[in-house]
Image 1 (cartoon, rainbow, N blue to C red):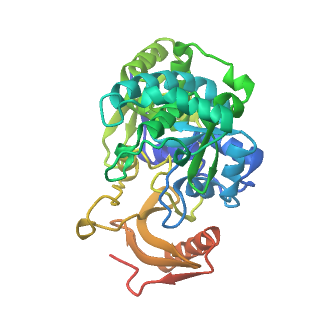
Image 2 (cartoon, rainbow, N blue to C red):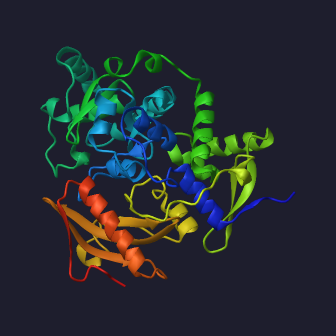
Length: 396
């Protein structure tokens, strides 16, 4: 039996379309429109780095030009249309998905008891009831409001005192929920005070959740290996995702396809049976400045296979050894990644330090005009009054 081949150009467009990047970016970016974007993406990663804008805000802005950061805060703290928890990292997740996180709560609880019970934070379980009682009595709190049992050390997360560790454990295991943020500081309350009853009380069977996770990952990726399905939400194990693929192939819910990379090599994956006829419109030719944690790019290996774009965060690389910079932003044009840019918000100025084009990308007048237009748009989004360019900002 011949396995269908998805050519690289088609694969890129399928993938970008699933990630809402094949349209012009209309929509209000708030309320029901924002909820729809989050539902289509599955989640957005939350990240604290703020050299220009936080990752989650950039992800949503790339899809809705009218989006502003307050909208996600309202979705969490006022509308209760999203909740915070973990996928591969901390994330804002549509509230209707909450029942399927109960498997995650159970697994995280077991894993954290084993891990944290053996290190410097040992004793946190004894503090859990105390922390719960405090929140029951006094209401929502942040990590700075619990316990006086500080551990002396470097101050990193590994030096959390038992009470703070208990607070994190209670959140990760589902007893507490994030009710709002102040700046980037989380406030926790009893889950029953935060999560709407219809989601709080639903309890899917674990097998149902695994099916939902794998099917949902595939529908958002378009095509995937079993390992990519497991990694998408990071709850199903690789073995569970492999079993799901085997069963879905047997009953015709998915087919095997070969996905061509930018280097011409194919990768065997699974996809829905109608994948060859699925919509794959050409994305607009505009230039987009992307978050490094954008869902279209966070799987670095997939981005390199599909787009030929190698990226790594250099935050933890000593400055003298950095190839580009502390925190540079990928730049997309149409269905192609054309470079990366080093820019930083300084007061009301967006300071552009450098743009490195990808090999083979020519910086003609039209492309530079589009890049400058995107930087002007970014400045408005970031609350900057002007864009300033370093003398040697164009590299390569």
